[in-house]
Structure formats: structure tokens, C-alpha cells
Length: 347
Image (tube, rainbow, N blue to C red; front, top):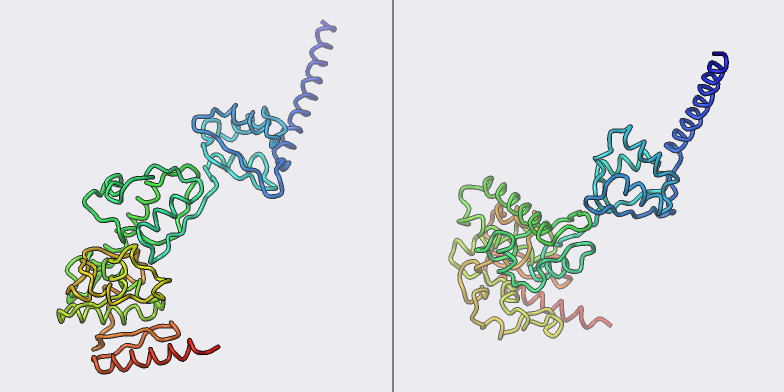
């Protein structure tokens, strides 16, 4: 009995020492920073990877000192089956608990795609194709085929996507990016259309989208968007041609060479018969010509009141001169040409 008692006491002491040692190692493991580079370490968890495999991969990458203690921590924190797949950046100073929480919350690396106001659909698709970590599924498809993939087969793609900075994880599809931008545009346009003034000359939200795209391309000065909207809505009300150069350029397509023509349209372009030549055709063009910003959309539905019917760019490119009649407009054009010549003659 004495031998058995001594054995039990000895065993308890050994187990206590072992438990204390393991406990110390475990708590030391939890608070000790992971082994990552100064810039952080990128770690990818494929879909369906079990937790023990995640721990082993982290240990093999040199991030963890003990896969077993990591598994114990995942279990005690209730995260055994909650670690999410994705591409992660493990930042310097992160502890195993920080990492487990990061994997549990799915805080993956986020990439950014900035869609710029004024882009055409063609330019948008080019940028999406070149963006990092986006899974490409629309390459080689026509605009109509792309819209069909998005579930909007009957719609023209131009102007349908909201210009904004979109953040996304690695592996997102090009379709998902376009769907987000499409929904954002529809949401913004619907809100503005429902809040519009009742006396608007525009007969549909799509008309507002078309006009907003023209406003976007006419000026880089946001403060005069409502002035431009005022000119165009008054022209529409009077059944006057819009005479919007950006629509003519859009209608000319790839035949327009901005460098060759010094960013000006030609007489040949002005006489070209196409649905976008607003010098020959009264009313709005059939579709938008670019992606309008929120400010352009707001201006289209809240034009500035007044009598102006014309505008011409200032020689320095900083805005426009607005006039109420053709005589004043021609004078403004003459002044523009005179000053432009003087600017070009300065050595």
C-alpha cells in the first residue's frame, strides 16, 4: 500500500509538472508573435481545407512553432470548424489568437478596382480584365453577351455601372464585380428619379442616365454640371438639337483620333449620319455615352434654372462661358478662338 501511495503521489507530481509545463508553453504560445516577414506573410487557405491541414500548412510555412497548440487554441476558442478559406495577410506582431480570429472572421486581403466617371463600357471591361486576382469569365464575349450573362439581355451596357472604388477578395469573378456596380447605379438612379421635380422634361430614369453621361463628358468642373444640365433641358423643351460634341465623338467611335484632330471634332464628323449626332438629330441619343458620376446624375435631375441655351469652353480649359442667345454665343466663341491662338503663340 505504501508503495502504491508513493507511486500515486509521484505520478500526481509528475502530471502536475507536465500540466504546468504544457500550460506555460500554451500560454506563451498564445501571446508570442508569429514568425512573419516585416511586410507580413501572405497565406492562402483553399476552399474545403480542414483545420488540421491549415495548422500543418502554417507550421510548414514557418509561421507557427506548434501546429498542435494552434489546434488546441482553435478548439478552446470555439473556432474548430469556423476558419474560412481565402487569401490572408498575416501582419507583423500578430499572435496565434489574432490569426485564429482573423481566419474565423474571414478578414482576407482586399484588392481595389476604381471605376472612373467618364469611362466607356469598353474601357471598363479593359480595366476589369487587367485588374489583379479577378477570375475572368467574360473574355471574348460581346457587350450584348456580357449583359445576358448579367441577367440584363435587353439592355445596352453603356452607362449602366456606377463609378466607385470597389474592394474585392482574390478569386472574385468579373461577373460579380459588374453586378455590384450595376446594382449601385440602379439604386442611385432610382433614388434620384423618385425625388425629382415633377416638371422635369425627362420622361424616364433612363433619359436621366443618358443626359447625365453627356454632362459628365462635357466638363471636368463639377460646379457647373447643373448649368450644363440647364442648357440641355431647355434645348430639349424647345425641341432644339443638343449639339453636344461628346455624343458626336462617341458616334464616330474608333474613327475619331483626338490626337490627330487636337481633341476637336471635324466638319465631316458633324455631318455624319448616326443616332449619336446631336447636331443633326433632335432629342437625346439612344443610349448613354459613358459612366456618369453621382454628381452628374444629380445635375441631370436638378438642372439650374435660367435662360442660357449655349456654352463654350474657356481657352484655359477651366470651365465654360454660358450665354442666352446665339449672338452672345458667337462672340464667346470668337473670344475663345482669339485667346486660344494667343495661348498657343506664347513661346
